[in-house]
Length: 119
Image 1 (cartoon, rainbow, N blue to C red):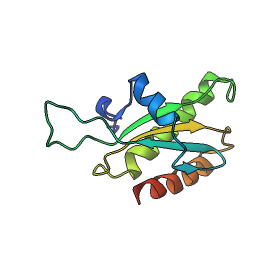
Image 2 (cartoon, one colour):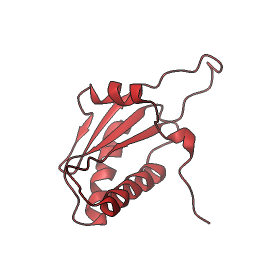
Image 3 (cartoon, rainbow, N blue to C red):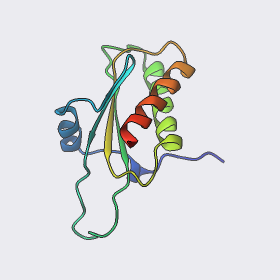
Image 4 (cartoon, rainbow, N blue to C red):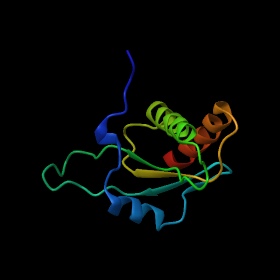
């Protein structure tokens, strides 16, 4: 059985992407930049803490291969799902800066990013 990436944990609104990308990256690395913004609270459930959500920007001009872009997205989603605390209420947009050579390098850098944003 695989542990999926729930729809509630994904950013799908373009306004959130624009808001996050208009800010400075909270964590900057050689492969990825991580932009974070506070989530918009839902008026229907003001007491419920919003989940930490993830958005991905993997430009075709940086990574031409669709299979490689999907591979990168899978690595980022899995790292986010396993490493980021569910108690953290922030929307994160991860932007690819350079194509990783291998998965361990990408995972190691993402782990550093998640630690930076959780403090």
